[in-house]
Image 1: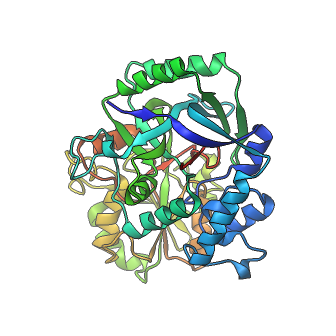
Image 2: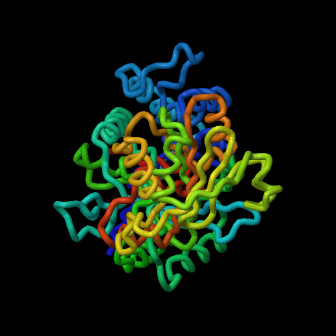
Image 3: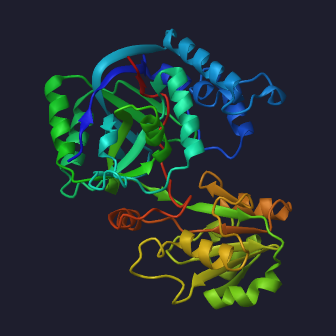
Length: 426
C-alpha cells in the first residue's frame, strides 16, 4: 500500500508561457557546468537559477563553487524572487496528473504526483517499506541537496517512481482524467517532449486517486534517490514524488568513457577470455559492412539488445558479447551489462575496481555514440563503451531481489521536468 498525500502549498506556473520560462532539466542531466551556464544565459528565469545557482553568473569565469555558502545564498535569493514573480502562484492541497508525450511516440507516459512518505521507503531499518530504492545513496551528494532544500524552503526536484499497475486500473483513470479536463499548463522541453499538467484539487477526485495508488503493493524509485534521502536528512516526513505505470516509462542507454593507459593490443587476449570480440570497423564503414544499420554509420555503434556491448578505440568499433560464466543468471544485477563491464573489463583488466573512480565518465543518452567516439579521437579518453538500455523487466527484478542497480546504469527517458510543481514548506 502506497500513501500519497496532497501538496499543502504548491508553487506553480500561472500558465503555459510561464511554465516555459520557469521550468528546466533536472540538475543531474548535464555533462558539465558550461551546459548549465549556457542554458541559464538563454533562459534567465530558469529554475536552474535555484537548483544550480553557482552557474547563474555573468560569465563562465565568475561562476561560483557548487554547494558553497555564496551559491546557497544565491539559491535562496533566486527562490525568493520566484515566489514574488508574476509568473507563479500558490495552490493549496493538490495532487496533479503529469503527462510526458511526443508525436509518434507511444505509449504516452502519464502519472500521478503528490507527496510520498519517507517512512515507506525500504531500508535496513524499514525492511517492509513499499517504496524500493534501486541504488545506494552517497552521503555528500544527498547532503548537498539537503542544504539546498533547507535554504530555499522548498522541494524543487521530484522523485520519479514506477508502479506495475498490472491491470491498467491506474493508467486508465489517469488517461480518463486527462482526456476529460483542460490542461492547466504545458511546456515543450529541449528534446521535443511535451510536459502537461492537470491540477487535482477536488476532494472526491483526490480521494479516488489516493485509493488507486494505495492498491499498488510497491513502487520502484526510477530517478531521485538522493532527493528523497536529502529530505530524510532534514527530518522531513514527505518528499515530492510522481508515480508512473511502469509500462509507459522508457529507459535509454547509459554509456561510459574510460581514461586508462592500457592499449587494445595489450588487453585483447584478456578481453577475449571474458567476451566474444567482433571487429566492426570505423564509424563510416559500419553501415557498409552490414554489421549494424546504415542509419548508425554516422553515429557509431549503440547496441539495442541485451549482452551486445560496443567498444571504441583507435578509430574502430568492436562488438563485445559476454561469455558464459561472466555472470550468474540467477542474480538480477549480474545479468545487467553495466555490471558485467564493471567486473570483467574495468576491474579485472583495467584495474578500476571502484565505479566512482575518476578515470570513468558516465554519459547519458543525451549524448550519442558519435560524441563518445569524438572524445576518444580527441585523446581525452582511451575507450568508449556503449551499452544497451536496461529493460524495465530487468530493473524491476533487481528491485524485487532487494538488490541495487549497477551505478549509472538506468537513464530513464523522458525525464521529469523541474519547476512544474514546487512544494513549499510552511
